[in-house]
Image (cartoon, rainbow, N blue to C red; front, top):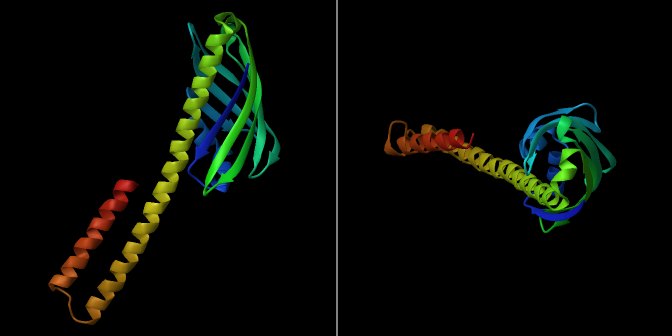
Length: 200
């Protein structure tokens, strides 16, 4: 089984590279992932629950990163065993490039399955693998984009708080404490705090 894919991610390449090497981001992006632990700088241990047609199983295995070329890409390979359901093993070459402030991610993957999974049929296995890949990248893009959006909002809130502090000091110096201008600044500060809590 071979697959290729291309995804445009609305985030800088360095951030996408960091996310691709972050076990927490990967765990939250992989469909059915129950655990993902970093064993070393290039090795991860994973437990993933998956269903291919009538076959459902929990796969446990190791993932290895090689040919690391930060922040341009790497090769990822691994093997998972699902007991009587069989096994799945393979690898993928992942490449990142800048694309007008965004990141273009392309991959080429090869995999093979054995046991009951092999009896399901190549077409169904291919369709399930493609669906899982699409779901992974949809989750990954949402995760990376959400982080970027949060950082932007947090920055804007910090700037607004600075303005409020400066205006409050000016109002105090000019003797406006207790007047309508001061109360307006206090109200603005409260709104900013509410926005910050909401985005947290």
